[in-house]
View 1 (cartoon, rainbow, N blue to C red):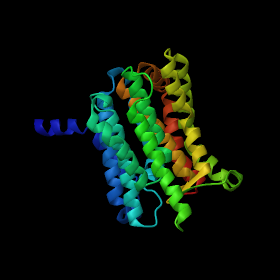
View 2 (cartoon, helix red, strand yellow; view 1 turned 90 degrees about the vertical axis):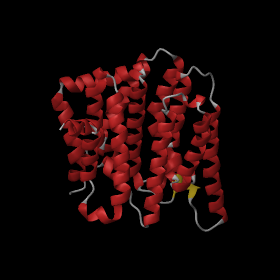
View 3 (cartoon, rainbow, N blue to C red; view 1 turned 180 degrees about the vertical axis):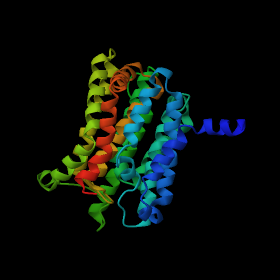
View 4 (cartoon, helix red, strand yellow; view 1 turned 90 degrees about the horizontal axis):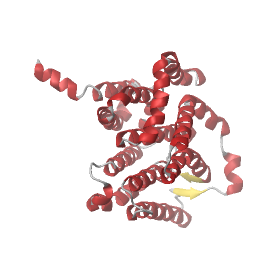
Length: 328
């Protein structure tokens, strides 16, 4: 009995998260998505479980609130079930997603990244592999990787930008440029630039605003979080990093207007993955013990703890909005 109890304690957070995610997979889509979906669900459950355990005791309940928001609604299901035509594209996009999660783990390794030359060498190649597997990696995940590298450099007291930062940035630009150039030299354009005159004319504003409305409470939450953290930050370098975190979603939207790439999932996927990566930044800062962001997160979490009706209202909004808007 004791051994069973110990086994349960080891997965007391991971198992519920995995089951919540697994239950979101529609039965009729099981045959197509089960393998990729369950792998990503397992990876997400494992990471979130680790984050909960490592979070400071006074912040743990707030961390659970944020995870409840992350798991509510269609966001995680849509990210783990991208619209694909061929199975090999699904495998590539799943591998690309896993490349990002692995990159975050490498950066957040127990010893500073800059003291681990083996990992330092592999990180740029991992990011380039992510772009090759799914070109959207360059638009969605590379900005987050660069922000985390900036933060780790700040934490370790390094002045200026580290060589790993430049290797990731230049490697990503090199792969993206190669795809764009090869597109002009062949009939198949893996990635390309949309002319400025055309870009804003062809954008489907209705789809963009509908997708943003679906996660509006989360957008408002992160706007308040970063604004409060920016105001409280005393170090100018930390202020700049927080400002980049705050403006990163706008940069991603602008990039998605001015560039196109194959296997795009539309604005709903873009908005969802922007919110997901904002959660990644928040959890990374909490796990690293960054006091300024943790203080702002604690302020929001404290408000939710005192106003549980607001917490429940946000969860219900996230769950029911898609059902109402998309007439399901």
